Length: 329
Image (tube, rainbow, N blue to C red; front, side, top):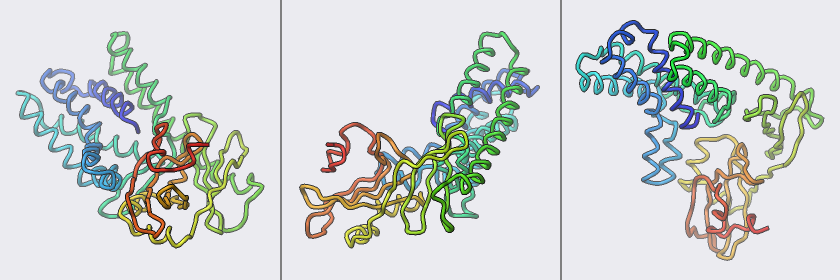
């Protein structure tokens, strides 16, 4: 989920912790638990610091080992130990339990997104994503805001509003899982272009009834479209180049970082004023008719690598810095 959602979920868990008699009756424990769930709700995203080093390291590490079971234990114990030690009278066990719950909910909620995490590391060294809920879900965010408002204005006791909130959200997630399953199962029958051997990936949007769809065809191309109210509409085809310069760029660390985090990467070759740009793009993400998550390898006309970029090209004019033509039309 996005940072704002993790923040409101942290506040929501602080409200839910009032159902714990020890937290409700001991101000020191309540203060430590509040800080613990707020920090725990953000702790797995501490890997953002790798962005200060370089984008390759950030892409490799973001939502990686920091979201794994061993690190969940580390985050929980570290935060609880610091807070229990810093706040006299706070119950370490209760601070630990609520902090651990915040960390685990952060990791599980990220599994529902298309980006996924390394949540099964070190047992399974691959990215896991369930494609159930969008990075920002208006329903989850708005229901948290409503519950928090009822709490801080003292209109409803936190021991009432937050159990109701999380019961509703559990039912909401179950509904989204079933809706996703229905779309996946219905696609082959509703797709007029369906052919044996093709595979579909269905991804959420902020709209309840609309899902983005990526279909991988047997020839290695991708069909991109959406599903809405039982109908699939294809809008674009992504064709991947097998040019020798594309293959030569595959071993570059920037490209490998992108390939390690996605099974939906497609490469194209574009002539530029300095030679060529090989653009490896994750076709799951689309913005302003382009694919913003890319690894760009810039080469001269002899095929020597001049420079590279890996990350998000989603700001107006950002692609022009690398001599790309698709923003000029």
